[in-house]
Picture 1 (cartoon, rainbow over the protein chains, first blue to last red):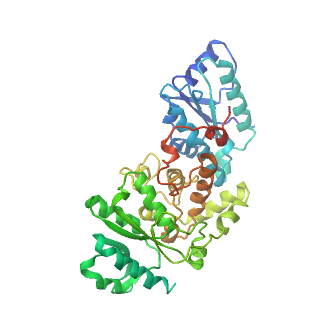
Picture 2 (cartoon, chains in turn orange, brown; picture 1 turned 90 degrees about the vertical axis):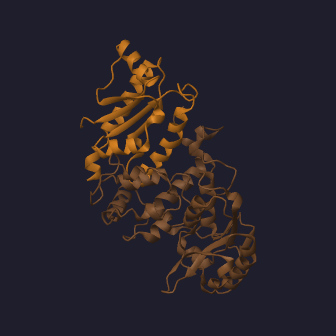
Picture 3 (cartoon, rainbow over the protein chains, first blue to last red; picture 1 turned 135 degrees about the horizontal axis):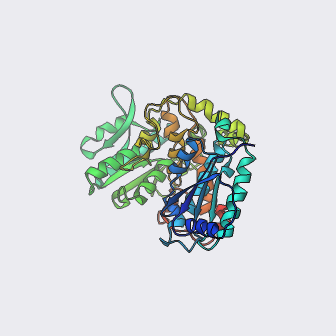
Length: 135
Length: 274
């Protein structure tokens, strides 16, 4: 078992606050996820996700506000529209689409945040390192 | 193929007095087929009217209309080019108001050559030739049968030959952004050959063609390395159709899904968690 490198893009208004909530509640979750705070999950372009993989990340998480709760009203609609397409593209290129996690975590959902991180880290741990797969 | 040429010529001659010019293909003095603007003052050039091979004519239309926005133009277009013109108009490249479409129906052989699933024009008021049924895209379907490792190996092998000439982007009628992400050092490393894995250039381009690719196969035709690029675009077009009920270039009044907010039922079809 390797220690995977995971990059998490967290939206400032919900998921990043959710991470805070998890911390304040002293919830335990694996330390593999390196968090990058972004203004909105809609800020995370497909290029950014691809570059993260290109740099050797084993997994990428994009966490945003629940649909309808976006600070910018429809910013996460973009995420919901482009990320499924990107997952399909990864699949067509022989990259496991499960390496890209998209989920919605609100500021109050500290517990959900810990669970999402826990489950995703376990899933990525079971996969071989990304750079090895790419050769 | 031969009976379409006189019919097309007649259609252009009939349209010429009403417009400033008609865009089509012409065999040049050196025997090379290239886009040409036929005008009534020089109608004799119609003698060299050509219909094959396919050239990116909509791109020329866009360039002329950028320079002369009020020009009234006709254009000879196949179904894929027609799609491209509609999509360009949706992305505010020009207005369809001053454009008259002359639909040129492809033959079965041409459809087989392009692996085209929908070769019959739907928007053009004037049409030449008989509409035909589409053919299955065996290259894409065969690719889909590969498992994950085989797909990775498939693209690795193909992209090893990519010389990053940007030909696929330059020829693409749907690549018209003022600033191109593929020229940004942040996403695509300059001068790096062979292509890194994952191939940033091709993946970024495939993402940017979401709901834009009109399946004209110009990219494949122009690729000096013979990479079957259309596989990416066609598979994503199928997904976009399934998720967002959007067929590129089909309905003039329907906006591209990536520019809009989620609509009723769309979220459920994306397969994202609830």
